[in-house]
Image 1 (cartoon, rainbow, N blue to C red):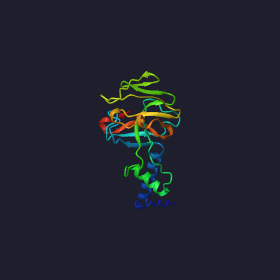
Image 2: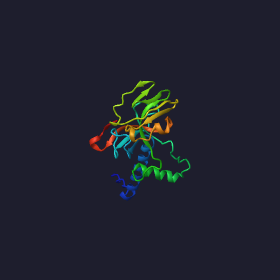
Image 3: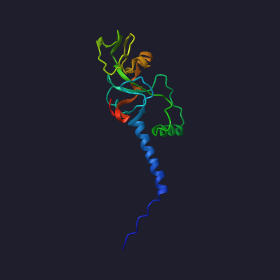
Image 4: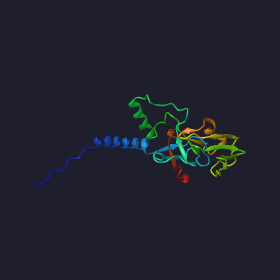
Length: 200
């Protein structure tokens, strides 16, 4: 006896289901794993130029601590929290941000880790010193002038960050060390433009 063919779900029903699944997957990836970030300013030149896009690993510091030289995305010290945001509004915001349809309510910053907890940082005569030792910084924008700064000892659980374009960066020299738990993740690859594709 021949088996009856299994009826197929109409396309007009399948399509919204597939779109919903794709949105949920995008939100989960963006919220917990990897997120793309757009570079809006020149504070990290030449490492990152205006308009570059990078991928950020949000799991980087679950099992390890930030290290000097890491390029990190973090919440600014002056950012507003969204703890009281209604659930539906939060979901709509996450979907919009994941698809690039809207900008985040909080402007995340991207800078380089210069020192970690327990280290003492100083800039003297245009030279970065960590615990009194001169640090080579090949990534710093050529011709940058660094006014004297510090010495500042970084508390445990904090890091000091600076932009690579030291003359045009509002960074840890202004707002001080940031708590590690304010770090969104580690930027690990530049994905746009294609002619600048590569690891950071």
